[in-house]
Image (cartoon, rainbow, N blue to C red; front, side):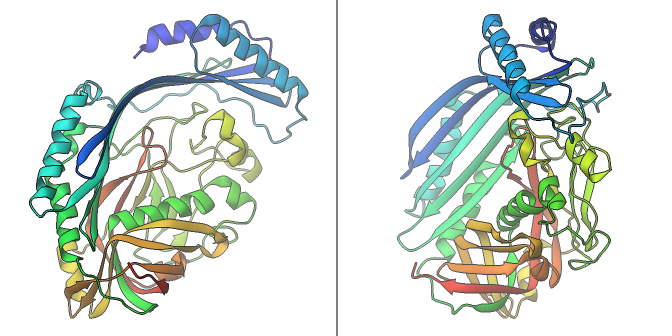
Length: 450
């Protein structure tokens, strides 16, 4: 950790030497430790310190971006010059809204000392406890456990100054027998939030109960999608539909449907980086304060998320969802997605299924088939079960699904009161917080022999 005062002193000295009309510097510094395990032993332990610095120079409406990972002043000045020269060569960007103005940010506690100082030995001790529970059933286990800390700063020539330190931790595990597997995961700002014993017991139990799976024919089934499955589907919907680019290009499931009902009225999806029960963060990578955005509210399409440029195109305001300058062409993106919890007790949801399928998680999802209709395809994994008369009858062999998620969400029967945190594509600044969902109809298009 460099610290706010020392970091701003360094970066402001570079900013002062800019020849551009406007200049922005984004700093992301991270210290991360990762322990990986497979075949029930630790096979990799790594630690990384890295800084990423993005400098954006603006000449009129021409914008250039250059990056560095060194805080040596001479290297930063070279990066500043490079961004200026790149800007000179660019065409006019009439959609450029200018750099952000100074703002006030919500005061948040996103840093945890215990997590920042967590040692490789401490991680190994937790991994050992996972392996021990797996060994009791003569299963093997693989997975990862990471801890990280860092700081993010945004400053520009409009006198905007934003700074936030952070910590993060996550774990995932797959317990395996000869014929089955089970999965569990969690993420948080605080390492003490992760209950390794409970997670390991969940993964072991799923592996145990799904041994010797039977084959089930593809078709339309009632399903219970557990939080990991919902999170993986939401991650793809976020990528193709909840951001500004797809919406403004008329390729999003929200495009042309704002104000219209698109799912069951018990489905609400929103982005809220200010909720400290998850991996909260007060500002985006342009330095704009984060705002809660209702994406789908009681089944009705409401809004995508915006950065400054997309807001100009959409004739609205930024919601604080800019990504880093090198990726700005992708438009704004959600980082802190939630699905609103329901009223059902998760433990009782299976009892209401006469014949259906419980899905622990998905993988190999593809959401580019028909984004306007929210069509996803992918595979089940690590715990797929047949439900009959309100009880789990057997593990089943993995299946492929192909369905419109808005159509499937339109058949929602119940949503659990309990929600879980799941890793997003960038957990340093967000995560997914999701319940289990009981759908009346979900379409499986193929099956496997494993």
